[in-house]
Length: 304
Image 1: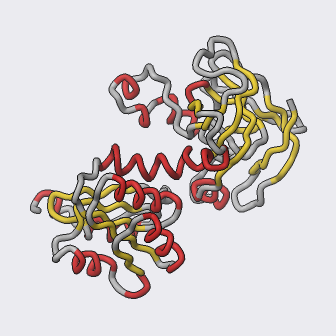
Image 2 (image 1 turned 90 degrees about the vertical axis):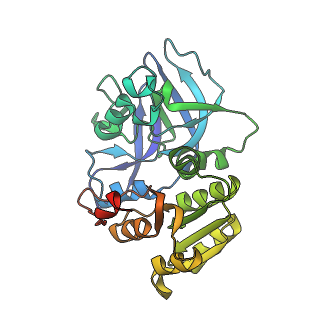
Image 3 (image 1 turned 180 degrees about the horizontal axis):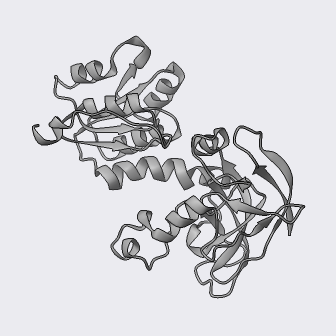
């Protein structure tokens, strides 16, 4: 099958829209007709070279679509089903999956960093017959994509596919950080550094679980306005002063129970840590470059 895809050949170059061949699904795989794809900053990191990846590669990890074909042994979905591709598939068999931590799946990790299917091959070819790598195992910047059965989740057919595309990364990352990683408690205080797609979902989830104070931190008034719409109770513009001091002032000098960093830069990571109260939880969600280092007061980890 030949379809149009956006292919990245070199860091810093624009994506190339071209015809690619999508190979049929093998055992345990499905082929998905992508109906909508979200654009996440993680894709931009690869395009800029901040996150080194082998190339050529088809990016895109947020998306939604319809199952077109299934390989031998597939049991959870069938042609015509609506699905959300999951950028971090889990095999269900490794130590982490069996231990209840599927996000750390060894198979999903290998796919993410090699750009290959579990069998060590790709399912994309360009017009020269050259193999094209998969991004996060799903490559939603292609009209059609072959991926493992474990990389799709079936959704109701009456759910809007454009909205469903955002669930695959921005929603589950932000809300998962609140519900699962931090397990934010009712009545607690929360600070969210960065009000992009992920940060806004952190804000929304914190409000959903009953946090009494949700402090949104950003440099753009427009993003802070979005955060307020999502439930933020206080807004802090970093350009108007030290956000750590502002958060301490808003929490009686204590700091917040939970701090989330959704940018991926050393400075806001340090600020998120410094704004967390004694016994609190700091969660880092932003994707940083491999060379990035954040400085924290290690002594505080022992002497609270």
